[in-house]
Length: 217
Ligand SMILES: NC(=O)c1ccc[n+]([C@@H]2O[C@H](COP(=O)([O-])OP(=O)(O)OC[C@H]3O[C@@H](n4cnc5c(N)ncnc54)[C@H](OP(=O)(O)O)[C@@H]3O)[C@@H](O)[C@H]2O)c1
Image (cartoon, rainbow, N blue to C red; front, side, top):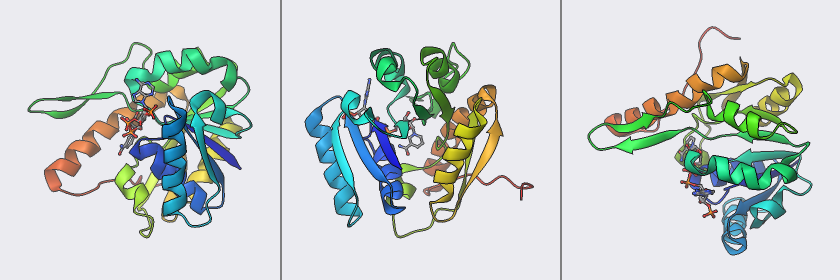
């Protein structure tokens, strides 16, 4: 498949892109700057020998992608999707955004967003796209440690069952990862909020945490 990353120059987008490139997919790293997108693609090629990775402006990498990952901060979601809604029409979009902020003395704090979750807000802005959410609990550091399997579940939320199965299939291609259908769009809020807890656990225990759901075979 061809996978594009809007805001793909950060650690999370690059991490998912590296893992997907390693699984044999073609990846396109998007940025607000063409040069930064190209630099991001070079990082993927350096980390994954033989990777098919290109880069460019966000609007340009979406092109013929089968799946478009949203890997930018929540603060940029509304404006970015407003600008790209046309280009994303008809696409399978995987939203990785976890709305959070850092507060002195507390650490990461999950935000209560007006539309209930980043996923639901993005669905409202992209009525012509098939939007799901996934990977919000997956640490970028873990993703970029390519020689280590990741011990984690990826919870996939959304309305479109086929789109969820596609993203579950991609998650399952990362060694040690299991994709799980976590339900409809309203469930995404809980998955997104869990990210703040994981970040604070990482700090407290000086490690990289992830989640596993018990009881699902
Ligand atoms: N880092 C993690 O371990 C982790 C784990 C789980 C989930 N997440 C979620 O994944 C998303 C990406 O995380 P990240 O750590 O990679 O984020 P990041 O480094 O802060 O941002 C990723 C990229 O987004 C672009 N960007 C920044 N501000 C933007 C704005 N206002 N509008 C549009 N684009 C903007 C930048 O690319 P250009 O300047 O090149 O355009 C940046 O390199 C976040 O929503 C985060 O909550 C992250």
